Image (cartoon, rainbow, N blue to C red; front, side):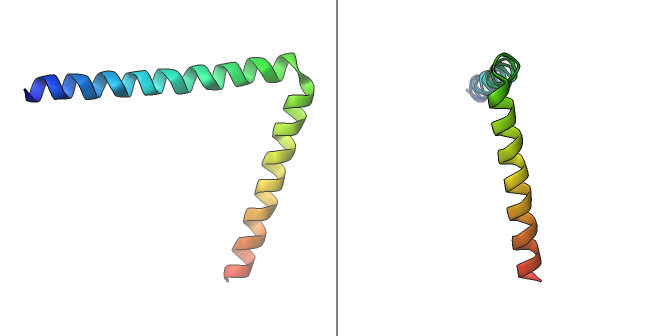
Length: 60
């Protein structure tokens, strides 16, 4: 029973990792296909970085 549970957990973990990798790959393909999406993702990362820096300064 324990072996079956471990096998099931490993299969679920593998499926989750595979789905995550496929999602990242699809996002990269879309960003190469549509350059505006690349600009939007870069801008979102920059805004998030700025917001995290401002909240770090406020907490000190």
